[in-house]
Length: 104
Image (tube, rainbow, N blue to C red):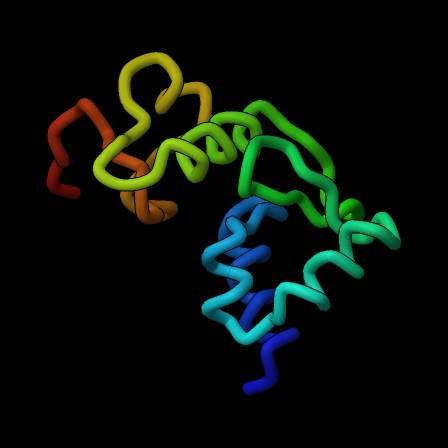
């Protein structure tokens, strides 16, 4: 898999967002990352958190950006988690539901 497709998979999974660390770990060089930002393909939404400009900012992506910026062991919970649409089907790193799992 190429670095572009690795990064694209992350972006798709995270509502159009990717962290600096994730981009570098997926194989995008620091120079390539600067180029993406300089050309306006990626924009900084929080320090070290970027949004692909083709993606739309939503309440969920804003909450996810904050979670990505805060990093581990931070988590989204309470009303923010409810607004963000957290469910067992969409569980992602950094997302924790304050509600117990229900069978069925």
